[in-house]
Image (cartoon, rainbow, N blue to C red; front, top):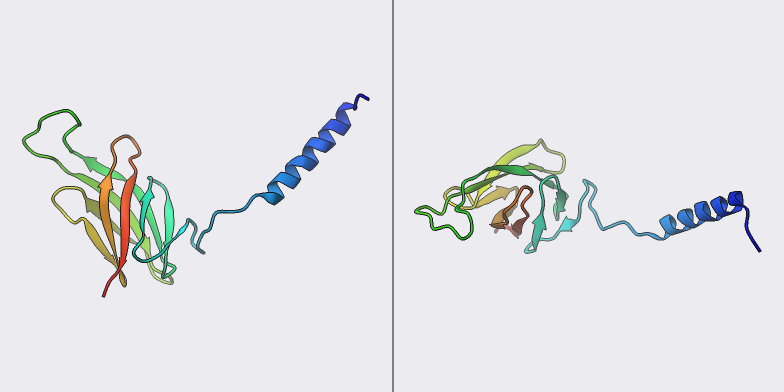
Length: 136
């Protein structure tokens, strides 16, 4: 038996509603993004945000400068990349800061936690490998 087009459209619309109702949302904090627990290593890309265990928000803005020696090239100096972030404590104002891969700060105190830049990939929107530690 052949179905008429309006019936197919109705069935397709119902299927979409059912499928969207069955999807689950990724775990996220009240500020958006996944919740990162103390001691956890995690990756971020430019534009992404995460929520820390104290309900503060961390956002990876961009790579400000990257003078690192390219792969396969012998350089006198390894270079440095500067990565810009924003941190907003729960109930507080926004703080902008940068972390570095070479000379410069590789970590930043964020309230009772310390953010550490473990590594930075290469490319236009490089992934930053980070670790959050609870400060003693």
